[in-house]
Length: 106
Length: 122
Image 1 (cartoon, rainbow over the protein chains, first blue to last red):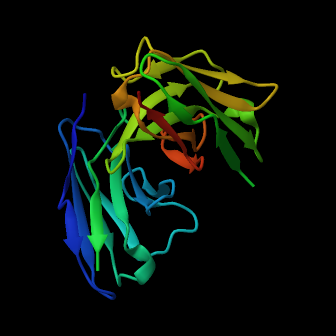
Image 2 (image 1 turned 120 degrees about the vertical axis):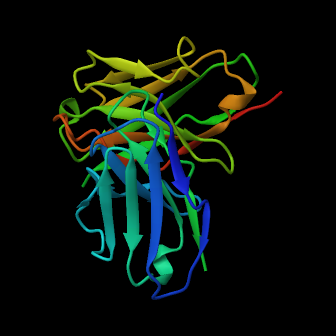
Image 3 (image 1 turned 45 degrees about the vertical axis):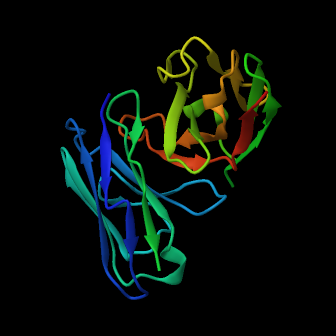
């Protein structure tokens, strides 16, 4: 199985900050990498797919980059609504696997 | 408007069975693959099962293979997860999720159900 490792697990930040989350895959997943945002008690929401493509309706302050085994999710100008948990997921190979999550805290 | 509405969760004893449903609307059901994903209390996301748009291909996580069965009913536009021989560690919120399309490269989870809680307890 492909292991996905996110860092950090928790990140403290403030409104208007720029934050970056890293996701590393144990084997190459090409560009088949998605990022999701999840708030407590809610289903995950797709933010980015194919490593860097922004899902329709997602604010442009979110961006993704990377390929192969190393990926990043960046959020420019953090807004109060962005404080949530973020997951990366590879969809290159079954079983599809998620990172353990990164919780963004105020 | 794409909608995935889940039902069927609840409390079940170890060794018992439960069937989850994911009723859909707002799109051509027969054109899309589906997945089930679960999240144990306070934990991260775990992929559980996949069914191709035409039902011809199915995959399972090792943790559920042989106990869980994913299926789909085209007339009712519903995806199911039959869960047998349930274990304590199957306790989780279960989500159904729809891929963006059946095309290669679109296997990410674009739409999600609201989740349904399954508790395995004696």
